[in-house]
Image 1 (cartoon, rainbow over the protein chains, first blue to last red):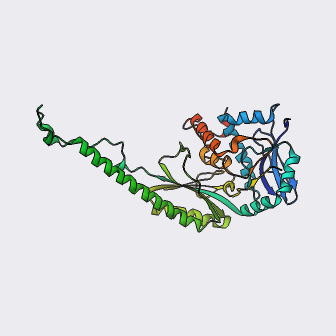
Image 2: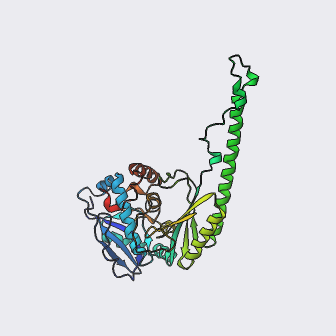
Image 3: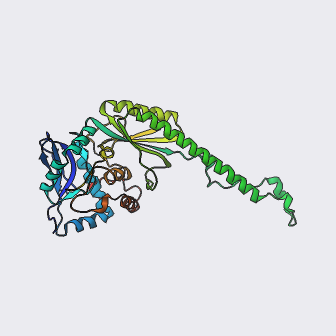
Length: 276
Length: 77
């Protein structure tokens, strides 16, 4: 049994909203609609897929170009809502057979969804990243220092080993110095990360600190990512939050700080809802 | 040196929410693919799996040439 007109669920908003922001279209450029359910409303779109339903949608999502377009359009819907009302974003590709099943979800899970809505109301998510600025002194790609010129003058073929530079020892010393520099750099990055997190957590309602392991490097950002976190901040504290970032940047010249936001609170609505 | 990037506005400290601008793809994928409410919907789609997210991120980033990722979505084929 295939779903020929599946409902793509973008977000849940308060039931008091009358209509979605004008002209909002979704991942397949379909118009976005509201499904009211008591104190909540679901924001959905009927995804226009021909026969094949879930399989076809899965295949499209494997296509990087389609996936990127879907991601940006999903986010565009969520953001348009976020600018107007408190918004609980759903993960990409939450799809139901039809509108009725979405409404059922809202009724059956109203408690969790109302809690999520309360969590995001009057707040926004801010992303903070710190990139280590490359230090030219510890740049391991620099060529090793050449031997002193005085040694090179006597270029006789039978030069004895004790008068030659000792490349093996030099190499080991250089390696040891480099490891030491790297350890210092790591310790400094850790210290900076702690300082940033401590300062920002006091201004936030909540913090999300994902592991950086396995995170692909962003080709648009130079330097090494050493700090990556999101903070849920009351709207009234946004200015102070931004000001604090600026202060931290002044205190940590070895890092390039990057602030993104305000985001809809994707990282603070971790509700796991099993389908009924 | 800091920069403020508004996923819905201009790159400046005073946030203008009405101006649309493409967001960094990695920042976006981090959120839209890996976070948000997770539901076991009726149409089983594997995109919500975290490992798949990282595979998708890499595939996506390798398919985007530097400089092109800043184009608005309407410009994509």
